[in-house]
Image 1 (cartoon, rainbow, N blue to C red):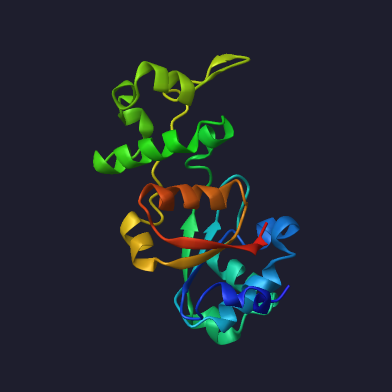
Image 2 (cartoon, rainbow, N blue to C red; image 1 turned 120 degrees about the vertical axis):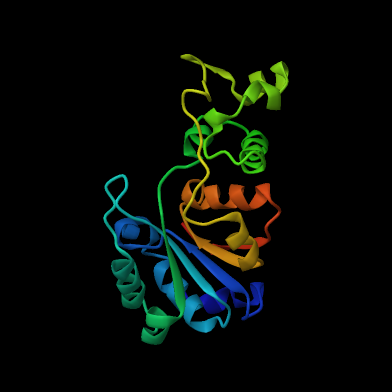
Length: 204
């Protein structure tokens, strides 16, 4: 799949953020990886690649991620000098996402963590952020009882800051997973009105 199918979605000078297109996830990202490489080659804006490393069994290095994209068609010059890489970690918001906590509630807590300079939601008093009714709706009762956000907190990522994301905007975003790691980055952006656009044809 070539990027020419999506090139009309944005100006060639728009920045690009690629999430988790790497060897460890080739089973899922392999179909879109050539299109991502082509997009990186064609664009004149700044290029950023986020990747998981040494976490949940992932052992990809920056060099291996770069080589993977090169094998998918990335130009050598772009691979060597045209991309800024960020090693990320896995699942900073996922415990609440996987428990179906509403995104509006997650965003409220993300904003509170930044405003109060906290790294983890367990450093906040959630009962001050939510009314009792809001709390019950945000953390609903399931088969095993109430989901406890205090026992399974979310964390602010430290691999890329809000200031950096603001500097990058507006940007195109592609990669994956659609409802996992990529969605975590989208939630972080949505919490602070950081402008981005998905390229749906280059998301897995």
